[in-house]
Image 1 (spheres, rainbow, N blue to C red):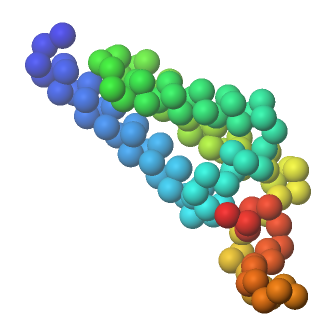
Image 2: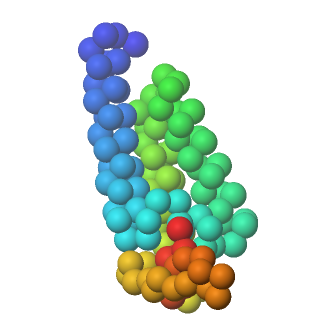
Length: 119
């Protein structure tokens, strides 16, 4: 591969990483960091982690832009699948609402509305 082709390949790969980052940032803005994977079943969570590992490996390797695009697109689909599965299971994105309380022995704790809020 020529230097020109390598530079083009790197630009394409970089644009895919930016697109994956946009989706990841949006999902974290809606749900919080690392929350979605905890709200879905283990099978889907494992598939998502595998997609993350494949993307990490693709970023550090020299695979061509076509192969990289498939890995990146799979990762973006993974985020959307987590979001859909969580919503279908009845989970709602955190609202940031919580209540502070004290126990009888004067320990403070926080009460949240749902699993997505607890982290």
